[in-house]
Image: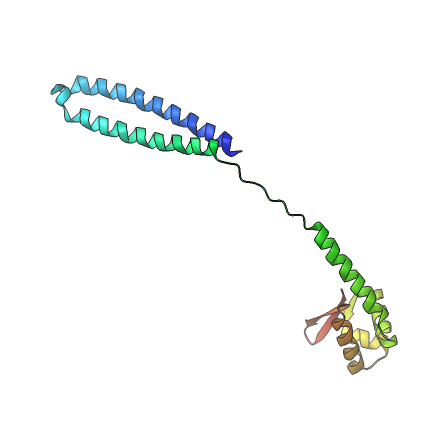
Amino acid sequence: MKNRNVGFLIIGIAVVMVIMILLFNNVIKENIGLTCSHGPTCAMYTDLNIQTWISLIVVGIVLLIGLFLIFAKESERIIVKTRKIKDEVAESKREEKEENLKLLGAEEKKIYEILIKEESMFQADLVEKSGFGKVKVTRILDKLEGKKLIERKRRGFNNIIILK
């Protein structure tokens, strides 16, 4: 709901409150007139006036809030489009990845091709499939990870190798 509409709603509520206060005030004055034997000097009239003014002041504050909402400027929505930036970042990452793939040596390409077929696998399984030693595979994976082509995640005593 817009601020302007809320302001009109609040002003409507304030008007209803004023009408209710005045109606109750008249009824209470009649009751005081019937029950109080002192006439217009009765203390109940003073109390009634004080309560009426307090009620009207509260309604006045509510009315001011409604007027403020009606005449206040709507807050502007700021829409930021990040899609273009995300596309540019993704494009630059893809270009960087392609450039890194061109710079791979024969052994690195062999490991990378095995990972492409499997998408992810344990490092121990990669050692078996590649035929290289553990140390050599670790060094090759270090290079691939440095080029941001793979990611290693620790699982127990082994690593899972995941393509990025």
